[in-house]
Image (cartoon, rainbow, N blue to C red; front, side, top):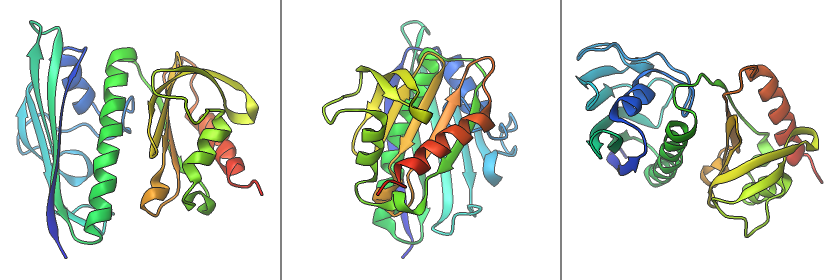
Length: 246
């Protein structure tokens, strides 16, 4: 049965309103995924078939789509960003509201969207704080069918070399592709997601097995010589290996 939803979040960030505005309107792959930037006007074309309904830089941006392309579980979708200055413009306060209509499997869809929102907005803050304005080589992909298992994220954490008690904020020497050492900060960790931040990348692990899908990985690589295809091949091989173990 169709039902409306709303997911609202507020946060402060050590970035100017202009930096926040650029991050959410430039189509950067630095924190979410690369996309066509919106036309800078009300009524302009937004990403993924949406229409810009509010355009007031650097304070308010809203886009809306009535028929969500490629997502059968959803019809209406709206994203709304409000940005206000703090500390005489040196910092920003952000309110983000994702609303719309889910037409199927409402509880599961809402739970997944709400938890993903927290992780995506955390990644936005990490980008603004550590990599703002830098170009990212971006890749994202899903694991094999076996990564739908209930304990899939525990297997991912173990393969990374993270102890059960390793918490967000700790610096670790993780195990990356082919067992290579990965000096990183665990910038996010809960039962659903793991975020690693290195000096040149944000590496995100998505426990979508909790909602009936495969585990996913996204890599935002800011190194000058970053190669998205090479990153995908390396990390996809790593993820496939995690779930090919007996």
